[in-house]
Image (cartoon, rainbow, N blue to C red):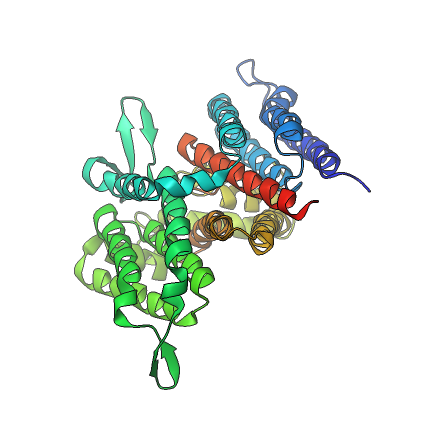
Length: 424
């Protein structure tokens, strides 16, 4: 029987081959230039941190899930390949962030093998997470209508990327202690069990925070992402569908009220409903995204042969649209399948974990990863209003790369401890 780490190295070698082919195709599609980095070297540079992490994982986490690392490598290599196609001058910087992210994941495996220690710092995580989430409202820079970034000189940082992980840690610890209490339902409304009003405190608190993000930072996507993570973890902790139903109703009510009161929310919703009304200005970005996806057809125009640069901010918010144009529906579905497979392994890990804190932490981290991917892809395809968040592991951005590698490291640590507990 092939060992877990041997399966992992085999899949990483397959990802390396795919990355080499992709980078070479992009290089062949453009006019040779001395300033353009060589494709083979870039592909190796992007994948090398994953091989190093794999070798160290053999010693630090030999029983960890063998699919998390190859899936992360696949998505990262695809994103960097598209960045090489769109903005080749940014690839070296992105490669540096990937290396730093791999060091972050390694740090988790080295110093947080017993991730249960994080429970002791749950309120510190809560305070830090909320501060990071709301700090752009006070000190942030508004970019394309949303205030999600903090800037210091030439450096910019999206604090919500780290803040959401800290809040997931807090919620996992809090719901471990209070989940049983919150699941009690002594009252009935139309024969449906309804929890006592005193138990709705956490739900209302998170609702207020999500509305504050929506109002102050002008971004529906971040608000939806944060509240969706909380509802997913609350449902797993309590098993009560009523919390999810009431939570969804609260979010819809709050979003509707914000739409009626605040002009920036109205603009985002109006662009989503009818981008063709002002196609030359406010609707230009989403319309170009739809044109790009449609132009890709079933199998795409070919790497380097499309026109994704017509989309503003294509290397951050719309990298999925660029990939769908040049790799077609088949490539877009492949990316979705990778995200869903990553989520499948994460939720399966949560089912196998006996430790309640680890279970909730795995659910929260996996929900964060999956919901963020679905929200930004939904925005790029006009399924939901456009957001300013990044596509995990694929979009350009240091804060996003670092936070997702930390997420990966935590899932590997949970997986290792769970496998040890089962004796496999």
